[in-house]
Image (tube, rainbow, N blue to C red; front, side, top):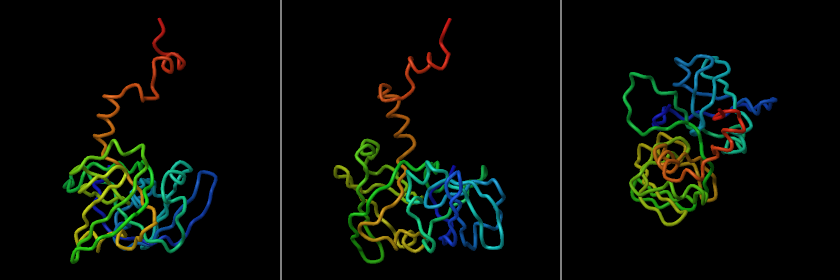
Length: 213
């Protein structure tokens, strides 16, 4: 579990394809301090597993599902990525519940700067529009943000100076893609209210051998 509060911006310094997907080598200064092999860490909001560690560097594995669903599939050496370690059980929860299970990617449509702050507008895939509510939460590249405005598939968020400085969002331009994770509670509520959309059906349960006398 993550909070959406980015700890630092790292840099991809190596990408090695393997049978499972790709291993990413990340240069960093802060998060490697107490990481251990097998720990979870979020890269641009994608929860990955740490493979190995060295001074100011770690590598993490992304499986094919993550590569297909997130911007890691098009990531290149030299890209800067937002980093957040998994939340400690005794830590202060300052953002919102972020699983690191990215739902999909969104396109940046526009920037509107207001002094040192900015309004960022993205276009999200149609299937996620129902999870978006004004003043609700969304994670963009792993950053916990509040939805300021929703117009169809266009979603706007306000970025304060600290967010622009401490994350990689300020380096993105119109037409770039970012990872999005919609609010966890919205997905659960939608599943309860629309059970017909669930892939878990009575027929599927019987197919697996359960529910038989």
